[in-house]
Amino acid sequence: MTASEPIPEEPVEDQSLLTVVVALVANGLLAVAKSVAALLTGSASMVAEAAHSWADTGNEVFLLVAERKGSRPRDADHPRGYGRETYIWSLVAAFGLFSAGAIVSIWHGITELLAEPSEETSFLVNYVVLGIALVLEGSSFFQASRQVHGAAQRFGLHPLRYVARTSNPTLRAVFFEDFGALLGILIAAAAIGLHQLTGDAAWDAIGSIAIGVLLAFVAVYLMRRNMEYLLGEGLSPELQSRVVAHLLEHHAIDRITYLHVEYVGPQRLFVVAAVDLTGDDAEPDLAVRLRQVEADIEKDDLIEDAVLTLALPDEPALVP
Image (tube, rainbow, N blue to C red; front, side, top):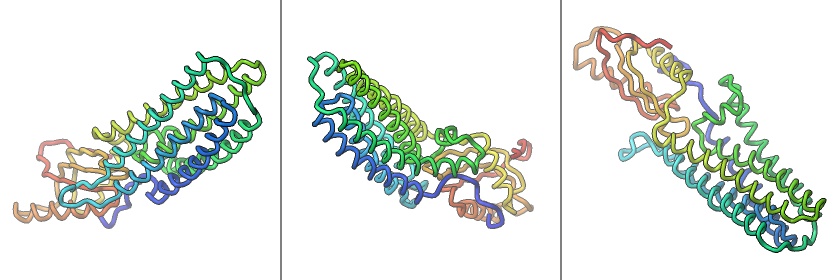
């Protein structure tokens, strides 16, 4: 397939790794700062924000593991590579966000709502920490958004639609976690502000619960998307057509009558196709040519494994 252009797909792994590292550093610093602020002020919303940042920090570690484990080349035991391991570790990270972030925040908010109100020692400390958090989370979100926007433009998609459909779970996780973190900061600031204005600590507890609900929504969404890819997410019709066009560019393929494509990892596809080869070779030569075409197709960085069979003469041809 040397004469054809590679199938347009998603960002390279180095960009995803940088995005995860930036998020890890930002969340690690914020987790410490928010924890100190929560201890000094007793704010329920700040406790929720600290739990949020600690959960995100742990998630980034899992996402780094996902990047490393999933990028290993295929071998005899795993002919389609280790790409699906990326979805497994990303699923673990999303569950961590749900358990360590959402549940802790909701539980603490309900506990504070039912408890006797305590005096807030310093609202200023909370505002300063939240301001720093806004800057650091914004920097991490900017890196993730830049990667998303660049890839979305290649496909002509809206960035939100692209990040929902991308086969890259680490990019999706960082993008939505950072977006959720920014919303969480605004919720915490509003809750603390209402507490300060009204003198009613219930607003602070409600803020903690609201942050927990937000984290639960993000976590469940990320878990669902990773499970769909583990079960064998197929391609969109647009990318399916591009694969058909890409295969037809091979000089030995005359037509395609069947095509099955699924993701076996980020930017990695497993392709099964029924093809009609050019020429009129004898059966032994035809088998050799078919295996050679498979090898040519697998030279594309996007295609992890290709399995070709011969098309029946009366089967209709697929068109891009």
